[in-house]
Image (tube, rainbow, N blue to C red):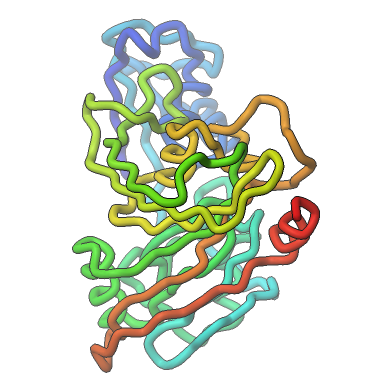
Length: 303
């Protein structure tokens, strides 16, 4: 049994190698895995198998045949987790950077899910075998609070709250430059970047409403520490909105400065507070994830 993904090539993507194009369009799959699919004739262009070096033309119809994701076998791995809170319904974790949330074909190990399988007796199964318990995500290099569902009832409750924006999500970030305003609201719609499909962009084309509220906590010589509260939850929202203001997150390789102003190993962005209604009790709960050592140390250096 296979799952199909289909694409029709537009002007923006002509002359791309097929493997590079698929890597951009399928961020949940590794490039090596996609190349294996091409080599085994599971990728077709205009109904015919192609080689990895095939260059796309406008109007090409690309079909990717993926083995059923449930066939992926996941291993429980003893990866340390900083658990803030846990009960029969949920587990709240202060996620470390450089940790992908869930596996994908070609990238089956070393993820938060692998760690959860080791630390938890049960997780909700709504998102299938490769994403058990995962209700929302944080970028690989973003640290901080993330909640995981341990049963389907909790998963459905939390998913609905995130969808309806009934949650509280507050971040701390170290950004480039001295932010002029003490506080403010960024209301700028976000959609896919038409020039680089790995990126999002502030745009009015095929975009969704995105609102972030920020407050400057500290100003340093060439940087600022800001607190950002999300009213919406778009992909890369804080990173993009801060860059849109002219103050990208320090260490952000996708939206930040091409040359680092300070020596950091990841983007200085942390999910600081996460609030929601408990799936069983219905009571409002809030969890604070302390800043990790690398951000604390940078703040001390800047001070």
